[in-house]
Length: 448
Image (tube, rainbow, N blue to C red; front, top):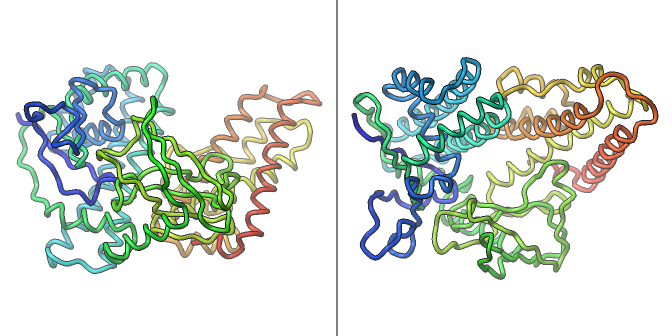
């Protein structure tokens, strides 16, 4: 029996070298190391261990060496029923498959030339790791909705008491957990430096180019002031350009990419705007702040109101494809609601819209692709697999939000006039008009 240590490739900390997790030196707290590296000790504060870190540990145990025995113990201790357990195992298997693809690319790079990789290899590896990170976040969200109420409570209790309490996370991106499984020889892996560096470039060709792109974005939306408050960290940014800004990302541990910002939010993100010369206060909660101390925030990506952008290529692509997915699905559903009239049959209406699939399987992505037309379809067809998943994920969220509002209305045929139905239809019509306005303003810049 032995403890397992796993690396956590968070985008906000990828450029930092791996650190060894151990007891804090005398005179330092468990949350500090040499005054710079944060350390979260789950045995002391399990609630501060991020869900993505805990899920990564759990999924590794459910799919890694000795996983057969661990799955039996997991079911026995958690008390999950068959249906709920299958949902957890499904998410674990999806994550393991994605992680395996990233590992395969890293091994290929290492075997061909451990000290050098081509731009195409770095791009492929970066996309694979971003997809793994996205799947992990999607699993956190999916299990919070898909598990039965009893199963959700049992699963959350298991994660808290049997994963988070036995896990520690450092600001250098290392998870250490003291959960034992049957001893199985660990497979050899290439040095982390072979792919950590590639992932940290966020689509740039080199560190120099990445840093220059971040500086350009930060010159457009300048980080002017950082302060601590009761709920976390407040970052004040200022629009130093002559154009509206609709979306942005702040790298909290610059020049490492990844962080927080005003992204494409639910319905619809493009209504957000920072006017020229205006400031915006970005609140970062203690739970979500970067695992570096002190933080070194810089704006890494800016999307303007006319669709032009400056910053890191991968973040620009993510923003634009996510926004395009929102626009497409909002416009489609607005047309369906408008045609439904004042007294729709909700069962038929839901059928016209289509249910949200439980995950972004190939079949689900094909169903989303089938509703695309014209330039939207061409943009999706020419995009990378990663970008298409971002787009279809945005369509999934729009559909999910609107279906939940429709299902909250009385089932069957509504009596006219119905205030709730009218309000819903008016809201979606307003959003659809905003979509059309943005399309006209952005033109070709709508697409990556």
